[in-house]
Length: 208
Ligand code: B1M
Image 1 (cartoon, rainbow, N blue to C red):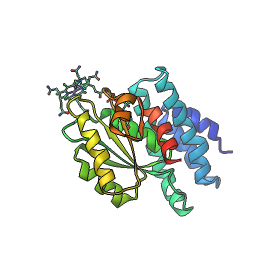
Image 2: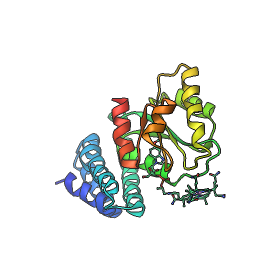
Image 3: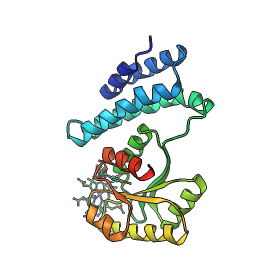
Image 4: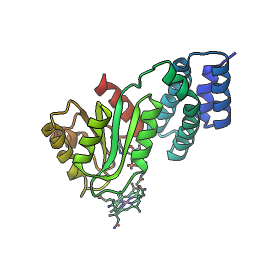
């Protein structure tokens, strides 16, 4: 019998082989792909996110869990596509213009994927107009901006402005080491998240 709680537990341990085997077994037994995603993988990644937030897990543990999640998603994706399951939302995620740091941004992307979002990775050193273009092309509801430098966080209001100018109904969430809630308020961003787990909660809140 498919055991989705055990799948979540193996994901939290970062035990990729066990997660993949349990997902395969559940699919073979005819368990709904969306149920496997929600009750196995997303449930597990939510715990990983909480542990990371509480400093019980560090970056390596999150990356290992995310790797197990990604390997299982390869198995699940065809079944999800067939059953017409829609992602929780589409997020264009990138590091702002002039900034080459991407470790935090990638972590946020993995956690968002773990939370059921489709993530369009815009990469690093991304100019405002590129964020707007990608959001339009992909029907995104949210643009996520990461900045690690005090000299590049000043690009964030330019993206907020570009979104407004394009008349897009897209929310902007920001984060990165020098970013604060006060800064988000000051530049008119819709949300700020201090870490990857909070970014998932914030994205869920913003997309509704
Ligand atoms: Co750079 N660097 N760096 N660096 N670097 C910092 C950021 C710095 C604080 C180091 C220092 O001086 N103590 C400093 C910034 C100072 C400042 O502006 N206040 C700095 C500097 C100065 C520079 C250069 C200018 C150095 C130089 O060349 N003289 C240069 C700039 C290059 C550029 O971007 N144009 C530079 C270059 C580099 C490397 C290329 C060598 C490398 C980046 C490699 C890479 O990313 N692929 C690098 C690194 C690794 C760092 C440190 C050591 C680590 C950053 C990191 O990855 N942290 C960093 C010092 C430090 O933080 N200890 C430093 C781990 C990561 C998981 O955390 O990115 O904060 P973080 O992400 C967190 C949260 O912030 C949040 O969630 C993540 C997970 O919890 N978050 C979001 C991030 N984005 C989010 C988006 C969201 C929500 C949450 O919503 C969309």
